[in-house]
Amino acid sequence: ELKVEQNPLFLSMQEGKNYTIYCNYSTTSDRLYWYRQDPGKSLESLFVLLSNGAVKQEGRLMASLDTKARLSTLHITAAVHDLSATYFCAVGYGGSQGNLIFGKGTKLSVKP
Amino acid sequence: DTAVSQTPKYLVTQMGNDKSIKCEQNLGHDTMYWYKQDSKKFLKIMFSYNNKELIINETVPNRFSPKSPDKAHLNLHINSLELGDSAVYFCASSQVPDSYGYTFGSGTRLTVV
Image (cartoon, rainbow over all chains, first blue to last red; front, side):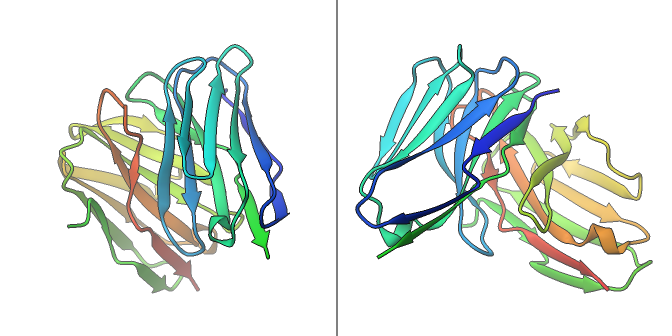
């Protein structure tokens, strides 16, 4: 059974600082996703990583995937308050029509 | 125009009642899903349908029954509601090949009292 572990689960940062969220998964997969969820809201797709070595960047967020290590990272550069949210990684399994297994989420709080 | 829409957004009901949640997507996607998010924010797949055919049916009580009248709609009917069913239920859709990720609806917050 595929297991997805995120850490840390809670992250309090100061504005302007850098930090990385880690997502480890237990079995082979070629699809990894990062989502953002604001309180009481839906999940917003941030990144789709479909191959080993994939790196994607959007604003202050950068995601990467190492399928050999079964590890994805979400790096935050010079955090701002607007980045405060819960971030989920999700790993696909069961083929392209299969489902996503989600990590427990990382609740990020960026303080001035 | 909303891509994945769910109704209702909030649902408060008594134990033992039967309720339905509706989901529609206008993205032309082939596959639709139901996910449950519990009070600790943990997300778990419940069902997956591809072109009206059930693909995934995780360990979910048989009080939960999905129905897909066409590939743009996936409804969730729940019989004999229990307190533990209280959660946020998200509908999602995706296209094969899956280059853009899953698109989630806004969620239905179900409270059983």
